[in-house]
Amino acid sequence: MEDRIPVITVDGPSSSGKGTIARLFAQELEWHFLDSGALYRLTALAAERHAIPFDDIEGLETLAAHLDVQFISDDEKGATRIFLEGEEVTDVIRSEVCGNRASMVAAVGPVRAALLDRQRAFRQAPGLVADGRDMGTVVFPDAELKIFLTASLEERASRRYQQLKDKEGSVTLGALYQELAQRDDRDKARAVAPLRPAEGAVTIDTSGIGIEEVLAKVRQLWAQAVDEKNSKRQGRA
Ligand code: DC
Image 1 (cartoon, rainbow, N blue to C red):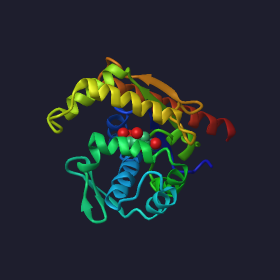
Image 2: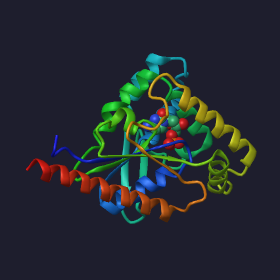
Image 3: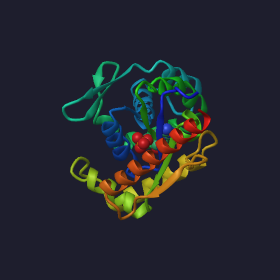
């Protein structure tokens, strides 16, 4: 157990800033990064492309189990390019429509189970920062540090609006607010792996605070976790 590969989980609702924070902290530590939401978005996109309806549970499960995806990190930009069946879909899967569809396929238990091993395979030396909804509760329950990021619905809708307004001309703040509220409800209410803070998770409310401030807090929490781990080790030696 002592020498297992360390994991930091960052869970929370859409647009809480968790993706940005998790990615930046992974870069800072020079660790691997898992964007688990991308796997649900890819499953939703593949379902659409293969005309598999959301009520075809077996079809969705098979699709998720055999998803042909590649994550290729673009070191110069610090970004990851994502491919589905050989075609680049990095931007396609970021649309609101795809996010909403992802939330629907994510409520299907067998789809979640089919994606479990694929997510755990990202745990590679020297460490992993994992971003999602159930990273700390289900996928990596033994993580060294668990963080739950939140922000008010108003703030999240406004952040999302700023991100999308140039890309998706038709978005309105009101519609985004409604969509986020619906997606939150669906992610929290589902029977399998609902969105909630893991036991022992530290919750950070990012409303009104900038990325650097959140990152500083995460850095401090990680330093504290490392200290605690070292003193436990010394206590045992
Ligand atoms: O983080 P995101 O917006 O890319 O996630 C898209 C959807 O996928 C989200 O509405 C819920 C689902 N999801 C999930 O259920 N479990 C995860 N670990 C990550 C995402």
